[in-house]
Length: 305
Ligand SMILES: [Zn+2]
Image (cartoon, rainbow, N blue to C red; front, side, top):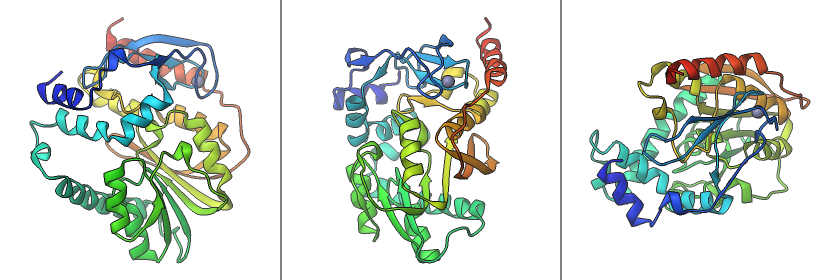
């Protein structure tokens, strides 16, 4: 654990080993009890977060895991952003920047990212479409959709500083976790960018997304793909970070969409990230035992066991 990470821990009194945790018995996605224990025992920052893997759908999850309240506090205080900067402190000067400069940098990065997402969508966004941007952070994607298409974005973001920055850029929204977001509105397109692995209960959240999406609506999500990380990271623990209670692969992402009533209609694989565009369909029971075994064998080979 580097000294910058230790400083973040002390600043927030975030002593992970002492926090309340819950033990998970069934896979949080497919509910299988066929779980391989302890495929990794630490994350990339050095926290003692143990990782299990489901052999029914290949979902990897922290077990035992912080409570929902624990993750709420962790996200609202923006601890994960500080950990990320502390981990990469040797690469850039983010730690010494003022908050306003950090937010501006993040917003500009999000505008660049938005261009790529919009290209991937191939102009599926229409003028006046109601868009929901979950985990919007500084709102770069929503601002880009508004500027380019005249769309009407609504953001949901738990980090107070990032949310305030987004609102100043002219979007509207709610400053809370998506798990606590309630609405009677329906949306034409919903974005869950780099956020699915942050959710404490992704299946419930994806079903909630399905409920608030119009029948002919589109749902976009992307995630750090464990399968791609495994191929490229020198150490397996680099694939895991505490802010992600889950590590998804192509297979577990399909299991998650099957169970939440979505079909993936388009995907794109980047260096570490996979993009998925989905439409609504009937819920299906995922059957990915064979694929999960293959992924587990890769994990075993990497660990040399
Ligand atoms: Zn499972």
